[in-house]
Amino acid sequence: MNELEQLVADIGERSLEARHGRPAYPDTFDEQLWRNLEETGLSRLTSTEDAGPAEAATVLTGLARSAAAVPIAETDLLAMFLAAKADVAVPETGPLTVALADAELRDGTVTGTAHDVLWADSTPVVVAAKTAAGLYVGLVTAEPTATSHNLAGEPRGTFAFDFQAHDVLDVQVVDEFTRRGAWARCVQVIGALDAARDLTVTHTSERVQFGRPLSKFQAVQHSLAEMAGEIERARAATDLAVTAATDFGFDSAAADYAVTVAKVAVGRAVESVTRIAHQLHGAIGVTVEHRLWLFTMRARSWVDDFGATTQYARRLGRIALAADDPWQIVVSCPEPR
Image (tube, rainbow, N blue to C red; front, side, top):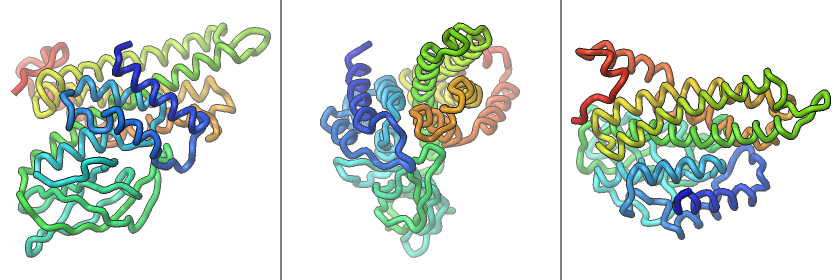
């Protein structure tokens, strides 16, 4: 384990221990964890430090394994990216989140409503507003008019916004923004599934039924093997996406293809892995008080962010059918732009 991975694991473990390893439902922002991330330079690793997607993936995966209740991907990979593209000033410290919304441009003011924005209940929001004239980016600190939460209990908010229009951006920036978000969610889901697998392996090893541990039953062994296989297939696709983003950048054709593949593979894995995890935990696995919920519900919530699995599956099919040689699409990434 490298130094960065160990550091993230230690910080995440302390956060989980402070929460007594149990879900808070609905969840709340972990202020102490965020302070620790800022003190160690991890809160904005890729946007302010000499780091790239590989390092970001290590942070996101590690924190997901500890069910970290902080908007780390939203701050570092998304909000800071949009702010830099549009030259919008944002606070130098503290968490940020992002929203993508349709809007209108009237007399130099961009107005609209953003719906179900993750962590928008108490965090400044960098809004990417799509208008007929192009894409505008602004920082919004409005209080939400409605609040809710996703399956994992992470807070979401809906709010009206208005800000002064400055430089207009090409709407294609939205493509890279969405790709970054989808990439981040794939990496985070892998971390959550790893934690769910570890809990399941431990439970089946310790739980004794009919005089022997559950893990000694052949049917349970088959289920554990299926779980491991699904996770490793998803991890391989996600590793490809991390490598593509590292080598060619998020705006490349290679990253576009690899993220599409990863979203499909991860989406397929979430359904079977979370089902098996809860089945093997038995009745205790369906209680919200059990630690398993911290990870399975995050995986189920995150997997549909920035586009559902079916959407990416259709897109992957179109990429293959449009290629001169579909087999090359299956066995290799497209050439980077």
